[in-house]
Image 1: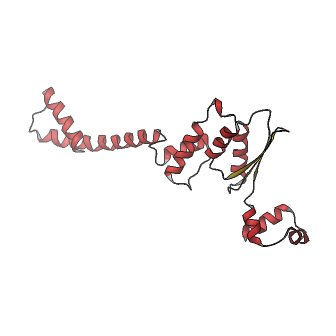
Image 2 (image 1 turned 45 degrees about the vertical axis):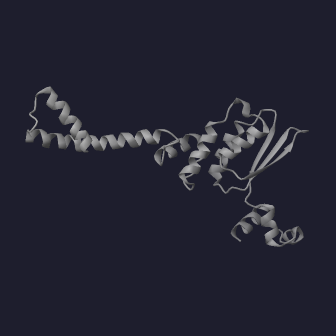
Image 3 (image 1 turned 90 degrees about the vertical axis):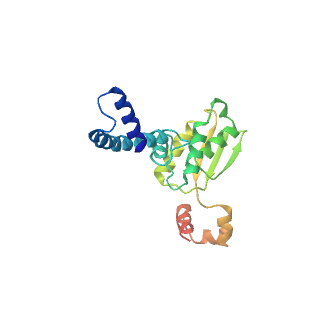
Length: 190
């Protein structure tokens, strides 16, 4: 606050309206300076939140709402990294490596199976997202898949490591007479 007060006092004394020792000037300027300093602090925060590299909170959330997904469960550094990756996708990224780069920008853990002979690509993500987030991610990813590629993105938290940890054979699961959704729901809760 003192810097604002000193600057205002210095400039107003030069104008000649106030005397240097005028008590009224000091009290009036201190009142103005307090509010101006608060506004400066808000402007500094607003400026900081405007750029991904310096944003801490609301700026990151705003960018995530635009470029998605909103990842408030991640650290600030990770949120910045994912956003910058999303914004770094270019025209030359329509290759498998570019596609991996795009999937990485969503923060997905995934495996890709390519079938170039039939123009198909399957992606299985083991990242846990809500159905709404899954639909949004599928929509966004579909925007970057080349038109000649048949593409499928599946979300499944069951990996081969999970299956092995269950220590059951497929025959044992089959004898339970359950659908895959029932098996997924059962194994998610175990």
